[in-house]
Image (cartoon, rainbow, N blue to C red):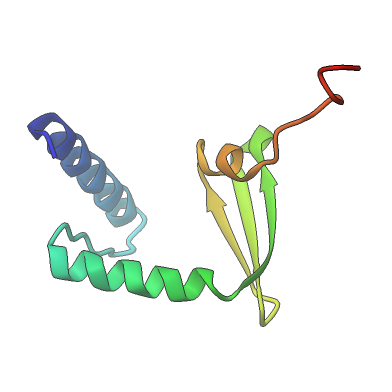
Amino acid sequence: MTDETADRIDEATTRIADLEAELEASGTTTREAEALARAREVLHAWVDTVSAVVATPGVGRVVLIHENGAESRIASPELPFLLAVPVSFGDAND
């Protein structure tokens, strides 16, 4: 990881933690390898409970529907585009 990338990640985590503090909601931040490995493990298990996905690129939102019917909403400028199926207007030979 470059110093520039590390600086951007530090700035983003600090900004987010500060915004949460303004809402009087504390959050935790970590970049420590063991804690990140644990977080990834938990996230993978959580994602494995997804039974449906609604991706709405136009509003930058993804809604995950879990096996128990619960909904998780993710606001992201990138994720909905990654999940959306590209539009096809037929075979190029038509």
